[in-house]
Structure formats: C-alpha cells, structure tokens
Image (cartoon, rainbow over all chains, first blue to last red; front, side, top):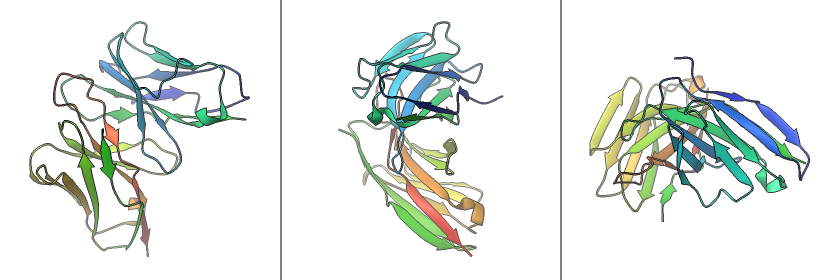
Length: 114
Length: 113
C-alpha cells in the first residue's frame, strides 16, 4: 500500500488562471473522493467517483470545477478562471468500495490564488 | 441538512486523559468516524462506530450513542505527539449512496508538558 499521492503539493496562481491537480489513489481502491478544506474547518465534500463514473457532485462544485477519472485509476481536478475564494487545501481520498468504510487521504494540494 | 458540532479547541496535560465530544444531526446515519490531522498533513483514520457503545483501540477509545446523536473520542496517557486536530465525521447516507462523509470543523488539541 503506497498511499494516496497528490501533485503538486503547493500551487500559487493568479486570479483568472486555470489550474489542474492530480490524484493517484491506492491501486486496488474503486472509490475516489475530492474534498476541500480551509483553515480551521473540516474537509468539505466536492465529488466522488466509483471507478470511472462520477456519481455525485456537491453544490459547492460550481461549473468552473471539473473532475475526471478517465480509466478508473488516477483523477484530475481542474479549476477554471480561479478566484481568491478558491484558495484552500484540496484533498483526495480513496477507499476500497465496500459499504461504509474508512477513507485514506492524500497530503493534499494547497492552492493560493493571488 | 447535516450538522456536526465539536469544540473548537482543547488543552490537556501530558499523561492525562481528554475527552472530545461530538454531536451530530444528519438526515440518515450509517456510522461515525474520528480522524486525526496534524497541521499541514492528511487526515488519518482513528475509529469507526456504527453501533452504540465503546470501541477501544490502544490509548484511543470512541463511544457512540445513536439515540442521542452523540459521540466522544477518549485519549489516554496523552503524549506531546497527540497535539493535532481531531475531526468527527458522519456518513449521513443510510441507503445506497456515495458514502461521502460530513465532517465537523475539528477540535484542535494542544498537549502541554
């Protein structure tokens, strides 16, 4: 079990630019989640994949956000036309896909929009 | 809607016992998790309760009362490395759903010598 990895660890961008983050889940895990966390808050659910299918999206996920998991393995999260309010830690998590179960989180991508 | 409440901050002394409380109100319920998160790091799983009662795992124990919508995390023999945020999270979906978790804001625990 090599853990969930995310890239990059940090991203600084100017307002209006597009950014893309990558998540590599634990290899045998079917479920993949994206969460967002701001300072002093708990993680907030953004979206969820079961294999390559995106099954649920939070209303927090505006149309500027898009996520993909094309082959049911790694996932990308793209934010278009970034805004200062997008500054946050973006966490990826994965799980085996067997009912209610613990999530394994990556270390996150810290986004700062200037 | 979903609502999870836990204290914002707590301070305890090395070697002591501390109890972190969590209350939840969710439309459905499929279990409650506790995660530990050190500053700048990923949350890591501590415990999961779905039935009423106490689950003990080494120095950490977690309790659940479904009828009261209440849980606590008990940390014994506190060590300096236990200084972290402790996140309470509920799975609000009782049916075939996404198994997403709703997190509380976290309790920042400071362990002092």
